[in-house]
Length: 214
Length: 303
Image 1: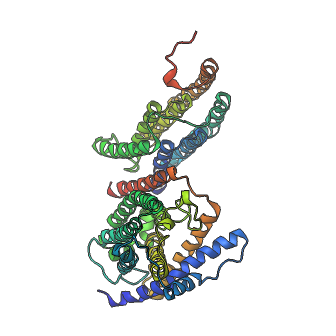
Image 2: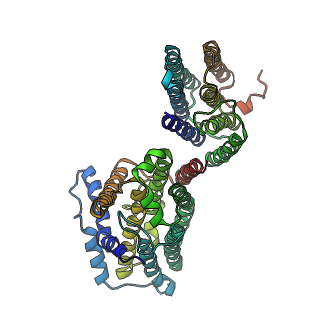
Image 3: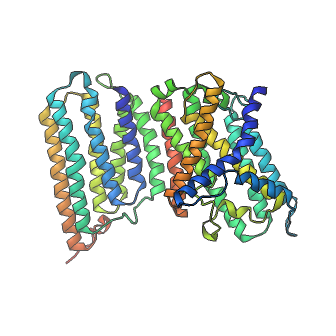
């Protein structure tokens, strides 16, 4: 099982790098969806010896929410706002990938210094989760389109999810569902917000939102 | 010096042009043509060697030395490559760095010869080739460093035979990442499709072909032969990493290596038939991506 979890973690890292290196919003949405589905399998993989209905439901619920519902909402927001590409990010794509490599190194270093309350399933989980959180943050600050910031937020949430599921293990179901609901509402609200920003300003470039309109 | 290493060395000298034939046949199959004979590269080399060479009056000895030196560098590189159950002809600690820089030496003299013609067109190709290979080099070196660390050796003859099926089972992500990075390096260094198109002579897109436009006769033959040897060396590296058949029986190992190499040639043909060339501005991104895969593999191995 450790092998499978490590494979998921490597997939997580690779999808993060893809997220940093691509300008097509559709690809970014799919990338985050793949992340979500891969992470959805983690509760099952992490507790394979004591599989319960609760874990399976959690896995199915989070995978379907992140793999089907969020992409659907985001694609709809993309259609409505009529944007396809992140054209001029604040940080270029090749530079973003290099920064990604740097933050991967930082996460590996940082996770070697963090002491965990319990034994981790794999020594790869902590760096990969930290890296995902960092990449999500970086996407939020370095991209211009409001949609990319939702995607960055989702990537960050994926990182936190990976962190929680594998390290803490037994998160109460209520907390888990609460987090999922929060994220769902956030994506829904941000989708609507993007639509309204687009209607007011004719674009969704967040750096120009401070220009008053009236 | 290992005398038994001379067997795959001689095999490579004989079989390398066949790789080009297999690639071209695959492409012809996809295009619905019958295609050139499998042995076309041999015919080409033989024909070019019989011809006379024409030298421009603006060129100097650098232009004449270029093809010979790159061929010599490729022969040196081939001597460092262990194949199947055989050790390399020459092996010492850290020889993978020498291999990377022998490829660099060959490129350096090709570029010098291109610049020596004084043609702005060839200078453009030279500048592109140097840029892209500078980006491909870290992917190659870091990838080899990662598998070297995994296998616990610094010599290619120590690294490649130590990558067995057991290594694949215990460290599959790492080796798969290195193999993917090496595939990109293989395609980029050999001027194959996502990076360069070996078929076209269209000015705006050419990288490798443009540098050898002024060579003729035996010189062009040497360049052609050196390029198929390069195909064999980098392909051999990739197959050595990606195909962990180490039975200990020499014949099976050798056969699986050759099978893997020709399967790689078919794969190259498939990639060339199904993919378009990338735009020039996108190529650095691809190569940086390959470097990223190598770095990731290295981090995974080191942790």
